[in-house]
Structures are given as structure tokens and as C-alpha cells.
Image (cartoon, rainbow, N blue to C red; front, side, top):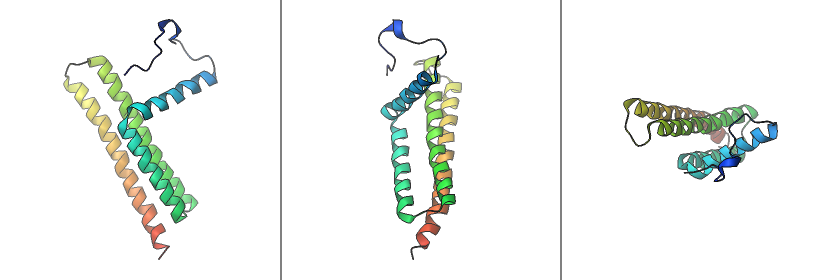
Length: 134
């Protein structure tokens, strides 16, 4: 999965010189997440569906705060999981190591915890909003 420029002379190795440059790298990172990480795309889809449901159910400001917190927490957890997987793969390559497995498993567990939190928040926010309709 090469994501860097093929011209080695233009690859950046030092610190960013300007905010715009930092922002460009951040956008590149989000593009890479979307392009290479199937689970990130799934979380984005489910989060988008939750936002659509929230619009239909006319959530209150407080409900929106909880819902967006839950959605972004899952996306951030998936981002951190991707970072851990990439760094572990870079270090161990194609070899197996118990600590590498543990690092990847713990990172995946963090995503699972965030997703469970999102389900709980979704139920606590959406069920009362649904009941207001009936």
C-alpha cells in the first residue's frame, strides 16, 4: 500500500513549515483512511445513518452532542487502531510476535469499546426521540 510520492527527492522528512502544509497532511491521512480502511468506511456509513435518523427524529441539542460524541469517538478509535496496525506491521514485517498480536488486539478492543459506547448512546438518544413521535 504505497501512499508516498514515488519521487524520493520530494519526500518530506522534517517538520511542517506552515499550517497549510500540516492541514494538507491531515487531509491526506483522512483520504488514506477512507481509501484503505474498510472498517472506517463502515463506521462512517453507520454514523451518517445515525445523523440522518437524528434529523428525522428532530433531536435536541443535548441529544446531538451525545450522538456526535459517540460517532467521532468510534472514528477516532478506528484511526488509532489503523495507526497501531501500520506501526506494528512496519516493525515486525511478515514475522509473528506475541507482543505485536497483543498490540493489535488491544487496539481492536478499543474500537469495540467505542462502538459499544456508540450503541448505548444511540439507544439512549434515539429511543426517547422515537417515543416522542407516538
